[in-house]
Structures are given as structure tokens and as C-alpha cells.
Amino acid sequence: MSRTVAFAYPGNLALNTGGYAYDRRVIAGLSDRGWKVEHLPLGDGFPFPSPETRRQAEVLLSGLPDGARLVVDGLAFGVLEGWAEREGDRLRIIALVHHPLALETGIATEDRDRFTESERRALACAKHVIVTSPTTGRALTSAYGVPGDRITVAVPGTEPGPMANGNDDPPHILSIGTLIPRKGHDVLIAALKRIDHLPWTATIVGSRTLSPQTARELEAQVVESGLEDRISLPGECADTRPLLAKANIFALASRFEGYGMVFAEALSQGLPIVACRTGAVPDVVPEDAGMLTPVDDVEAFAAALGSLVTDRGLRRRKAEAARRAGSLLPRWEDTVDIISGRLEAMS
Figure: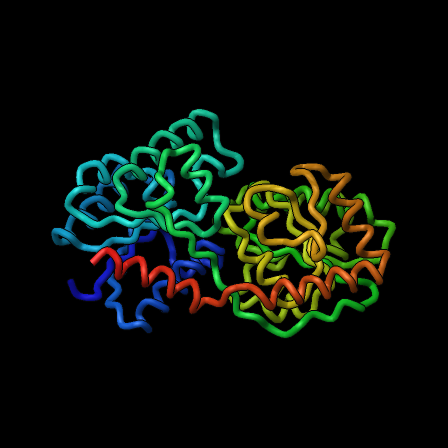
């Protein structure tokens, strides 16, 4: 069969999130390697699509010819279980799972249970599954019954920018992540309030569009904390490398990460990291380059931040370790090579 693959994704592919950035890089990389990539936009609202959006998405996907290679982003695939069961034998479906839908923060228990069941059924129909971290791969095997030989790990690549300068006074703390509950920006702001007696400034970069309510709550939290002159919430940024280069500490209190591309990016630019010990974060952030705390532990997060703010020597040592770790990270061409090879094997 020709080197043709359809790539289906929900929502706006141009959004500045880790998942969409991964999809864009893979699509562009496959095209560069001679693949003819057909874009299949599935519509907005996933993983809670309207009945009409779901119907239109299924019609679009079912329009593919018999035997077509089809990569479907997991944000949509996990709730298209009925379609997958109807079409799984006709199409060569590859699920691209950034992290299981049920592990998103802030969803109701009934939705979590429904996502677990729908994603399990959908994954059973995929010919193969691509995951962005070994942690996600293990979760799909243990909790969703996906055999290990049907899983390929394709860790996100990095595109290093200028190395950060760790000696600014006061130090600047940078956080990058969409303003949604899972990213834990509320924990970061609360932790910064705990150390407001120390000298620092902070910027929290991330799109407000995916959860406008969360964005409003975070803005209110900053005002209520009396930190408006020290914490900036500028919205999303297309290229965060200049921001990372000007920062001194990277901090993100995510409640779960299937991989955490932004942590790899921070390492690649030599930033010491404060994060939570959850999901794939410990696999990405070495202990000598970062400080990992329990999820939702404001006091521990504040203590870790405070130690890096006040101890220049510690900050310098962590930054040096970050640079070493960052130099070993895969590049995007490595990621795309893995996926291209998997697609070739399905000929």
C-alpha cells in the first residue's frame, strides 16, 4: 500500500497545548518523510462531544476506504468506542494516547467510570497503540488490557532554545501549562503566597480558552492573595523558548502528566524544576535536576520553591543537572522515526 495515512484529531490543531504540539510535529515529520497525510478534523467538544459532533465525526472516519491506515488522537478515540467496534476490522486503526481520559482532573465520578469503559472498548479495536511515555504504556496494559506487543512508545522530542541564566536577583519563576484544573496552577499560586516574604517574580503562561472558569478562578486567586504585582498571567504563547531562557526556576504543580513535554523543554534549557511526583513526571525529571513533591501538597511545594529561591548554590547545581539531562533527550526526528516505522510495519 502507498505511504498514505489519515490523521484524525479533535478541536483546534493550532492550540498551544502539549498534545496538539505533539500532533503537529508528527504530522509535519511524516510529511517530510514522504507520507501523504490526510487531515481529518473531528470537531469541538471532545471528550464530551455533542450528539451531532459525534455523528459527523463517525461519518467522516467511516468514509475512509477499506484497509486505510488511520491515526486517531486519544482525546477523541476514547469516546468513539461504538464506531471503533463497527470499523475496527475494516480499517487499520492506530490510537495515539497522550494519557487515559479517566485520569483528567476535575471530572465527575460517573464520567470517569464511563471514560474507563469506553476507552477500554475502543482500544480493544485498535490494531496498534502509540503512547507518549512508558508510564502511559504500562497503564494501558495494567488497567485497560492492551497487550504490550500492541504498544509503541514514542516519547515527545525537544527543540532546545537558549540556555537559561540562573543568577537573576530576584529569581524569576516560570510556569507553562494550559489553565485547566489538572495543571495545578492553584497549588502554585497558594505556594507562592506561602513564600511571599522572599524575593521572587512569577509568570504563569497558558491558554485560557479550554477552561474559562479555571482561568477566572486563578485570576481571582492572584488578586485575593495580594500578588498582582508579582504574578503575571499573560495567556498562551506560541514559542516559549525565549521565556524559558529568561527564567531561573520552572515550576508546575500538575496533578497528572502522561509525559509532560514542558518539563523536557525546561530541562533542555537548563532550568531547575519544582513539580509533583505523579504520572510520568518522575521519568522525565531526574532527582538531581528537580524537586518533586506530593500532589496537592501546598506546603511541600512552597518549601521546594523557597529553597531554590534562597539557595543560589542549590539552584546552580540543579540547573547544571538539568542541562545534562536535557542534552540526552530525544529530538523530534527521533519521535517521528519511531512512528513512521510503526506505520511502515502495518503495510
